[in-house]
Image 1 (cartoon, rainbow, N blue to C red):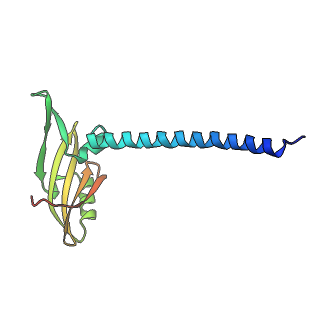
Image 2: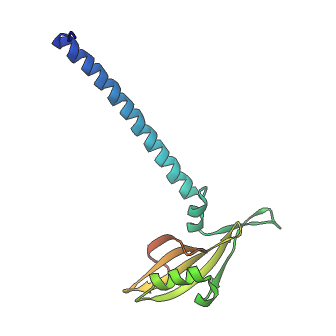
Image 3: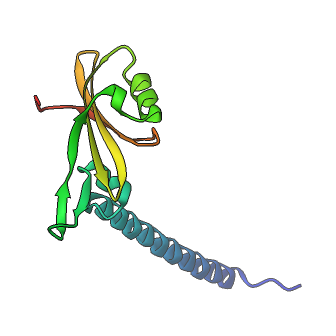
Length: 141
């Protein structure tokens, strides 16, 4: 099997490497665009679970618009999986308040917890899944 002369081999390897780098650049650009689309969708509420984090909204059939429906509930009023999650997450602290909201018939709970001198908000789905654990709250409500 004959081998290519060194200058031709280097040229062929260089062209191949250039093509591979171009493919990698296109892949990286595609990934960046995909990440931006997902982030933009989450921030705008197009992704349902992300919409729950921004305040839960339900269709208002009477007005044809959207209306936020939220009510304060006690720990005894939440489903058992939610109660178990709240008790586990608030261990060593105190539950400062629980709000229930509904989107498309699915309930979610915003739970304010005072623990270690800080107040945080945690969002929990009705099956007990934690959607998000927020940082320290600035509001005094």
